[in-house]
Length: 151
Image (cartoon, rainbow, N blue to C red):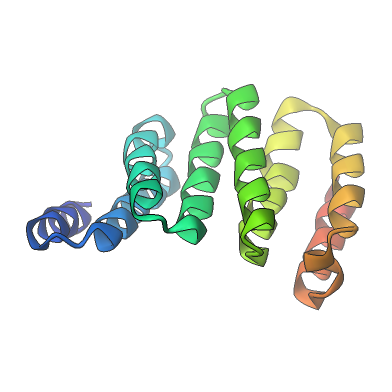
């Protein structure tokens, strides 16, 4: 974490806002991997703000997804779902397949099992299977089928 904190500081010093956002997002991801989800929300939201300011909409999708995962992990399921849905809507708008795939995958793997909404999860998986991004990508289709099979 110390190295990522240094990277954020250096990014700010040289004025590279995109790199600052990337380092903040990496910090959030690492904190989340260490089960420090509530703490991870702060740099994730900072990265989201930066990406919105500089117009990096693809990275904005990824920050929205990280925030959603962290919120879901600390029991804020309704707020998490809102962030997942924002990420997928933005991914759809900018035609970024991974901007749709990651939040959809995380909803199926994490959100629905935590909330016990298994019927909704099956319906959600069926809806995702109709998206052109899933239809045209064998990897995404395969993972969606696996996730549906795990429900």
